[in-house]
Length: 141
Image 1 (cartoon, rainbow, N blue to C red):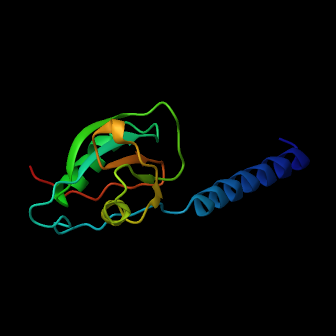
Image 2: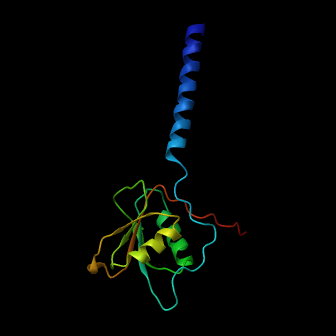
Image 3: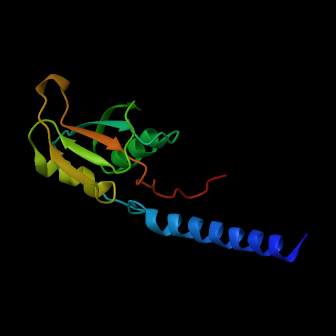
């Protein structure tokens, strides 16, 4: 290979590596739920939650469901959503913004909005985005 061509290949490779590194740094680590979370729901209170995977990553709604159930929330439904989201969004459906903030805290700090919808028969909708990272689970053989 000629020295000029070799130099172009080296410059192209260095530029590619720099671009990949910039993309990783720009994307960041995402939302990180705590490894251990205590029950956040008061005794005698039932907070009904639906979890929708809007990330496109397989199994993320199920993993978020496990995390929320561990925190004491009653996840009544989890499924995939057709829309795609970069960031996780917690929607207060029954007007209880404080409950939505508790759910967001259990997920590691998501954005919360009030969008009442009495036809859904639930309190909270979670739209899991690509920024959410499931808690690490210990290995059990």
